[in-house]
Each structure stands twice: as structure tokens, then as C-alpha cells.
Length: 366
Image (cartoon, rainbow, N blue to C red; front, side):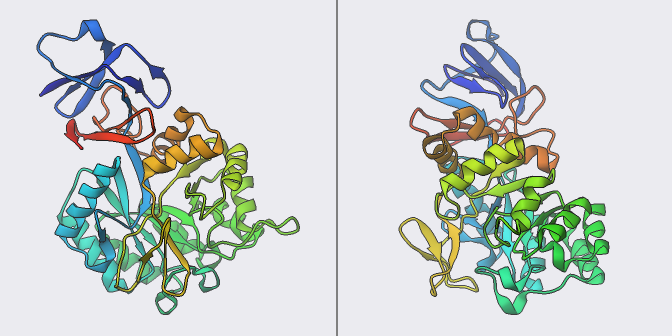
């Protein structure tokens, strides 16, 4: 169906535009035209009071819609999680799996491979190849040192579903890093006790980003800047959790000034669980029974709003941190911006910073 979305502000990822409409055909963006130039054969949909932005992208999220995917991977869990995230304003995400038994990873790989969903971009394995010193909420007994043969077997089983792996650079050999890169996997440094030198060595070897900056990594100290210092000094990207709990808004603001377009938003959100990761919902976060912080309780659109309200960012830049920059890191060429030929994936945001629904491949969800 040919659609025209009109009576809304449009933020393309680069410019904020008023007085124009987005033309869609067969789930793709044809372009923008003035509101009085919409062709007569287009079905017009009005979105007054809304700003249409590129569909929000979350590269690290564990659950949604009341489901923690790793508890019991299934097609039903995948679709329930996706439906919940679409309702929250996110149109594309990597299902994230924390350190666990390899059998859980393999089961999740099979489910994602056999049940394609337009919002599911693949899997993010956060572990098991991390440093136990910085395990955070991860299961100690499942942490492993990466070996080439095991990683090769996992990648073969994954059949291309694994798009990102978080590992501790000081625990991984150059051969493991190169193997992942050769298979098109984006590598993120995280849950790491790396020194500055070890962090830089990892980034120089091809690690492209870092996982939830400051959380579960060697600290930034004025005599030893650790992994955060290596992130600052390298050209790597880094994700950050904008809930004001995992990282203070002041630390987010400083990091943004240093890193610019290399810093992007994730939620690291979980759901209540009684499984291997017994997440307990508190007022504004999730924690394990012993009180260990285990995940956020925000949506990505809330993270965008927090960046505007508490960090002082412009709305446009906060949106870029949840669209343009993660898309650039992952090499996406048809999502992350509103551009001719791209998938018609949009998030609608009202004047208060709340979601007003999403489009995915031209289909509206609310």
C-alpha cells in the first residue's frame, strides 16, 4: 500500500523538517514531499502533534513484554518480547543473552534462526568470555576463557544470528578476536578488568565498541584510567545506560563531550525472572536477591527523554544516540535514518517525550 504520513514534524536523523510528508510504498521510504503535493493515489495518515523519528535501535536488551528471553527461548517468547518492545517505541533490537550454559546459547540461536521477525536484528552474547573479577550479575560458574575451537563451533551453530559479542579483551587471544571479526561479528569490550594498555591493545586488534561504559569494567582513575580511558583515547564506540542509576547523568555528559558520535544508548533492560538470573523488580531498576544491580527498567524512548531532561542534550542528538550511531556501528544500510530506499521504520514521539506508536516496514503498531 502507498501511504503518506503527514501533519507531523519529521526528524530524518540529520535534519528536523516541518510542512512535509513521508511517502511509503511496500514498506520502504520513497521520499519526502510538501504536504500539498501528496499524490492523489496515496492513503493519507495524519499524526498531528507527533515527531516522526527513525525507528529506535537497542543493541542490548534481555527482555520485553513480560518475558526474559533466556529463561525459556521459544518462538512464543520471541514474538511476545518483540511485541512488547514495539509497544515501547523500539523497532529494532539485538536479543541479549548473559553468561550462561552454552546449551542455552545454542537453543536461542536455533529459535532466532527459525523464527525471523522484522524487529529482531540478531543476538548479542554478553559473555561467557568475560573476566570473573568484573562479572557483575553474571553467573560465575559459566564464565569461560575463549578457545578458538569452541568459538568456531558456536559460530557454526549460530548460522549468522550472532551479531555482537561482549568479551573481556584481556581474556581473549588475537586469534579469537580475528575469528569473530572474520565472521562479521561486532566485538564489544566489557565485563573487563583491562588496564589502559590491555584495552588499547584490544581496540587496536579490531574490537569496535565497549559495553555499558563504566559498568563492570576497570575504573577510570587519575593514575590508571583503565578501560574507560582506553575507550576515550581510541576510536571505539561505547554504549551507555541512560537511567541515572547505572551511570550518573554527569558521567554521561562528560563522556558525551569526550566521545561525541561514538557514544550510543542501550537500555540493558531485563524482566522479572525466577530462572538462572532471578531479577527482582525494584522501583526504578532490577537487582538480584543479594542486591546486585542486574538491569535497567527503562525503555529506549525513556532513555532519549532522560538525555534531554537530565543531561541537557538536544532532542535531535539524543535521538541520534538511539538510531544513527548504533546503526553506523553495526553497518546497517537501511535502518537508523529516514532516507529514500530505507525500511519504513519509525518511532512517533509526542511533545512530552512519550511514544505514540511505531511503524515497522510500513505497518503501524501502537
